[in-house]
Length: 238
Image (cartoon, rainbow, N blue to C red; front, side):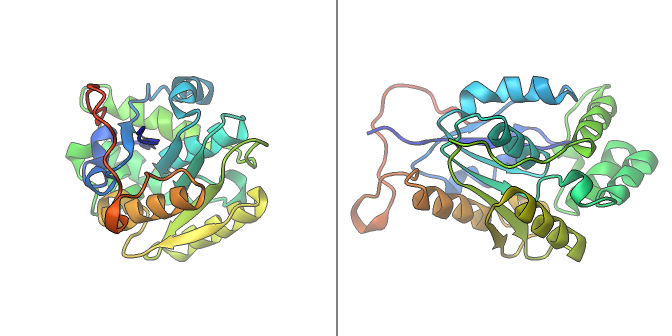
């Protein structure tokens, strides 16, 4: 019995370890927390993710959701995707102005707090002397994003928004959903940083959407996800 592959894609100012509280709620999937190059170049990021995401369920938050939407638009055959508050580009001008100000005045810490809120910690950010340059180039890439609908052949894509997110985020989600022809759902008890604020609820959204797409883990007795056969391969999280 093969576990369905689930690729988690992180955004800016975090690393794959940001998924630490989500993964325990995803039993039955082969979970892969993607380690991106964080290059600031959209083509490079898509190329790094395309092979591992093809045929997989993909989930992302913030910039990770933006990359998921770009993968779908470019025709990478995702099995399904749950994308939480991706960038909306010109559909929501000014949405990220406060984040730009946070980066300008507070560096990586100011950026992280402005984008993700108090659930984000400086320890979540990439380490090293180049961290601020990495975050700045990633932010520039995401601000320049131009959303497009998923290409034919892509599995079902769901846009999610945090129930606690401010009105501009909900307006951006509505505009993006209309532009791309995608359904939306709310993640309760969370804002932009759903993976940090309510990881169980975000994992539940992933599970439910994957199941509707026929891409969830097989069910065992009592509705519990059946454990995949032990093929000797190491767990690929993180």
